[in-house]
Image (cartoon, rainbow, N blue to C red):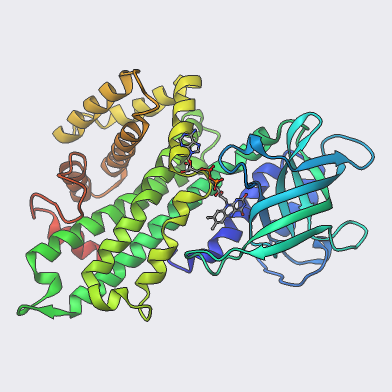
Length: 421
Ligand SMILES: Cc1cc2nc3c(=O)[nH]c(=O)nc-3n(C[C@H](O)[C@H](O)[C@H](O)COP(=O)(O)OP(=O)(O)OC[C@H]3O[C@@H](n4cnc5c(N)ncnc54)[C@H](O)[C@@H]3O)c2cc1C
């Protein structure tokens, strides 16, 4: 889980693409066995000659990232229109990561509207497909995942799903990619925590190991609790994704991938900075691993729908699918009666949700509350009692946003010891 995060992006795209490709059964049949093959085949040759393939995604254009409806890239049928048929694509994409992939899911306009395509690296005639990588992006972090700008010059592609139903086709993979962002940020946090625990266990200051100094114990316990909470929330979503035949788990996935991605990915950069500060001088130097984690951290909040977009997705569900919110609230209410602070927090959250006035402006406050409530409920239901208690007591109504602000050292020894494995 704590492997280099850059390699995660092509893997995420590759596995998540299956959900979209299933909208074209004939194409899915040809590609899915190669996509799920446990072998990486780096050779530059047509997909059908390869042992395993990877898939990228090209949606974002200069004028439209979050609002993909603004895309101008255009596709027209080569001979006949329809699901699984061949098209030519002309246009430009401003971001396309993993450009060495064997195929790319591309969004483009057609006569019937916005549609989804699979563009292979090689055409069925055995030619290199007609798209060019114009340049690679010089990014803050995420260096091991190349990101590029690409130009389609009549590129060959198959229509996936129906014309004009591009968003409907691609939406199925969104839960999976958002989930992977949650896991990735949880892993970055855990990795930073391991470094902080390791360093403070050995370094002495003012006559004691740093990990024995009360104020440092407050910081480390807070980091450890955040890290465990992020992983618990991610694994709760994993459980829901594994049980899509259960309607309530399906509804949970629909809403909690947006809330969880927003919450965990946004907290990771500050978390890693705080872990860096516990290591301080050497933690800021490039010889150390922390700068790499720190530069990597913001990307999970930025791609696959940035923070506001996740909040707006929550609002969309709230307005159009109230039964999804009802199902979530039912799950949260089941944990009531076990811990006073949790009960108070749920009541406060319900009041926030009920106040409809200016709701779009207040969305981040609401989503923050929901994220904490879902995390607490998950820990209460599945977690260790002491960890759940500490989360309810110290995180739900946290004093300020600084890390290391636990009001009591009641749980500190247990939480730090647990994080040290
Ligand atoms: C390292 C990296 C790799 C990437 N790889 C790929 C890739 O492989 N394929 C691909 O297609 N894309 C990729 N992207 C692009 C990424 O998905 C987009 O940057 C993202 O979707 C946002 O689009 P944008 O940059 O155009 O920002 P915009 O859509 O212009 O958004 C700018 C800001 O406005 C906010 N915002 C948008 N709408 C609203 C609203 N209605 N109300 C309030 N706030 C709003 C957003 O949350 C954001 O904070 C990658 C990005 C990065 C950084």
